[in-house]
Image (cartoon, rainbow, N blue to C red; front, side, top):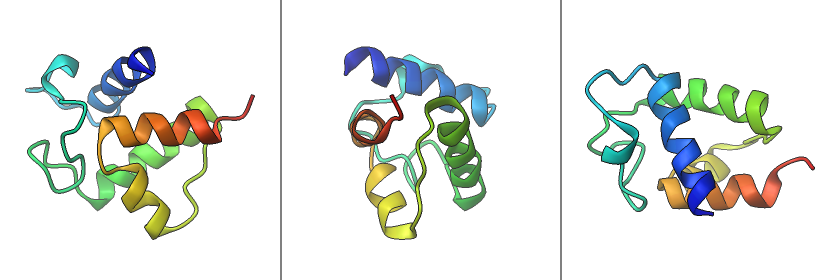
Amino acid sequence: METLMAELKVKIVDTLSLLDVAPEDIGDEERLVGGDLGIDSIDVLELVLMLEKDYGVKIESREVGVQAFASVRALAAFVREHRKK
């Protein structure tokens, strides 16, 4: 789980081109959407596409997205549970 969280942090920084943020600056429990990172709905769409491409994970509703993007830990748990093997 720790490895997946670290990997997701790198992908979040890269996907969103967060120039002033290093992956290690993102806390495991930090709120992703609406938090200090400034991730908005357009950014979420980019992350959803990255998750589909890189992990085969689909976020099919807003409610699922709210839960999945609650934090890096929540996102890692979602990916681990729904990842295509």
